Image (cartoon, rainbow, N blue to C red; front, side):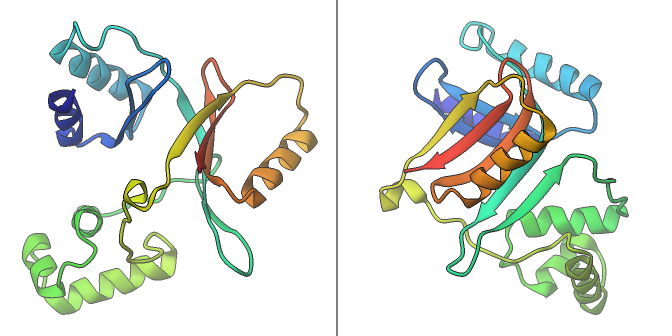
Length: 196
């Protein structure tokens, strides 16, 4: 199993790989430009391990809410939905890619990787922060080592009008154990990440 997980982690289109219990062994999340691109990458990945990756289910994300718990109120970040994508220059993408790999990288090291002088890098970072593309520089805590387990729940519902769906979203944002949730297209309507 570790060989397969390592394979997915090396794929530049894979943003997360989670080991699961229940009906599935793995949850793999891709980020791609369009469905056709996903189809090619997906089929190529599954050719690598045809015997081990024989069963799958695909969900397409409509919109994801990442919830940050705060003493004063819950804040959330929305990815996807009806928002217009931001067009970035190659330098900015390279900068974001390297910061995503290591948010503690020095400006000097970053300037070498992006091939721009440190003042330009600092200016670009400042600009990306002002536009909201960079929200914060943070660490990733291993929740399992702290005794927390995240469970993924897939929920199907029908006959919810937009008002009822808005109430459901408000409820989920304010529910203490909900880490994130995603409206999806597939055999379910919602994917909830619940920390217990």
